[in-house]
Length: 126
Image 1 (cartoon, helix red, strand yellow):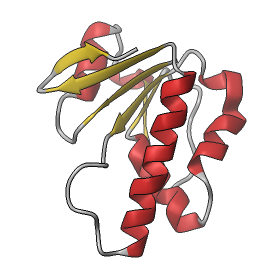
Image 2: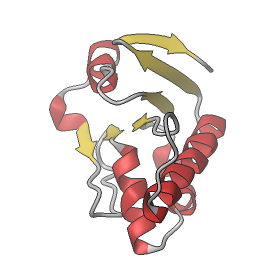
Image 3: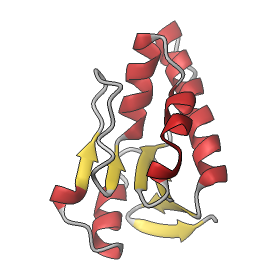
């Protein structure tokens, strides 16, 4: 598994497309109203939307990802780091931030490679 993370609008998907020969048809875009992930796609993009849907549904996103097990081993997972900035006043927003962090911790441990993208430039973390 490869995890690509970084802030919003930093070029994470473009980086993946350029460096891993990915076409747009290979990409599943997570939606913030669905806890479903299409694992038939090579790239799972916007995982933070998935974690938000899990918060709204009362589910633990990390557990759902862990249940997918080896099915994630050949995937590229793109997730925005939403841990920076002012702590939100809204309870759901705080829960989302914490859940997204737990997912990123788990993904980082499970991944073969972790890349941080900032200003479109990738930096290998693992």
